[in-house]
Length: 101
Image (cartoon, rainbow, N blue to C red; front, side, top):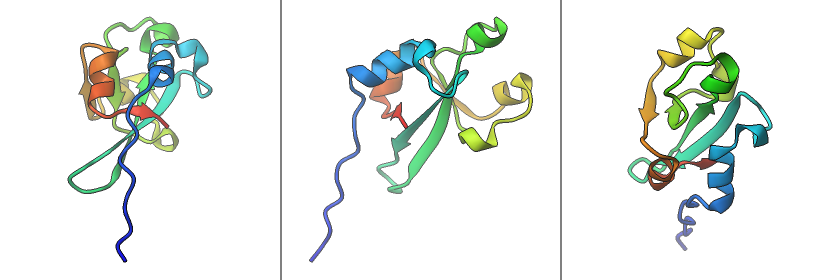
């Protein structure tokens, strides 16, 4: 008998509320997110980072940094230089499969 894998969870209104409100983030200034890779079946981990609220740096509110919460670099400059997925809106970020982890 073949096991049926559940389809990946899609972003909900709750995810959108968390994406948009860093005050809700339990690991502020980071929000762990994840998405399912349909090609490999793997789970990709990332972080949203409140750069503006944390240091006044603008332009990263809808950016997912491809780093695990336990592997966050020591400085903001190092984090900002890491591989990332950049989106124009939170809706676009959610449409690409990212959900709160």
